[in-house]
Image (cartoon, rainbow, N blue to C red; front, top):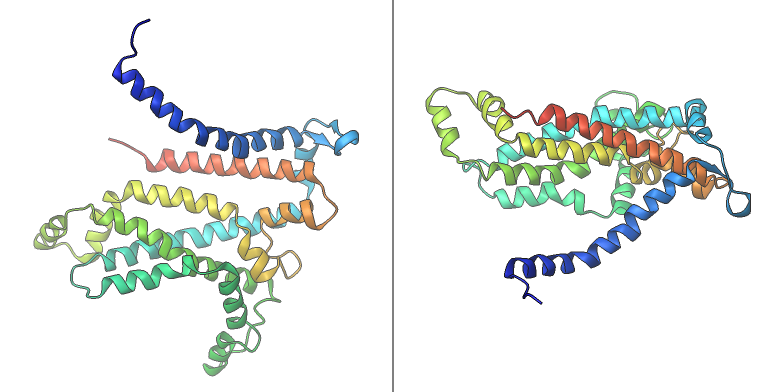
Length: 291
């Protein structure tokens, strides 16, 4: 028997190291995904289980609660993601400047919200936006009428958006800082000598050079927002009524809170998967235009 070459040994060793992780990913990720897809074409559980083809998917089109949750989720996505990414980019640009002292402290302070306990930050935002909370005291002090933030549908949606921006801006800023630190600062100095203003440098240097990082954060933010769950549950409990409930919150409710409808929940989960995949593909197609 011929001896195995060194290259083949290295390849075999690599596959052996990958095997345990690959098995775990298959068992806990891919297998449940396939089972959920199969479940979405059935009705009932156990002995009463039977095929219903696409009945669960056609039901989605008639579900008024689903339509409300879809609207809420899209609203959060359209408003929150662009604001958050732009704010992250601006903060990263400012904190990458050599002229600013104590940058480490500022970076830590801006990043800390995403490391804060979800329950803790939900309690803080609930107290801030309470009827007698700090925000209403400030509003009253400038002569405006207080807002019942958690009983008004649009006000409650804006509380969630503000909370999301506060929590995740620093997280995305770290990605942009990493990208900016790989750009030679002499490029900005040359642009300044040529008479480019800070705004021109931002739009004609920073954004084009950070294009791969911006694409990455856009895809991650899209996926995260379309699967938004924690803020809907902990901040507003989906209320008032279902005015702030997200798709994943709705899936949780019909699976574990109301009478369990696992087949319909599986169909909704597949729907979200398809939407995230399509939007990510569009973003990659639009953002990855190579010369």
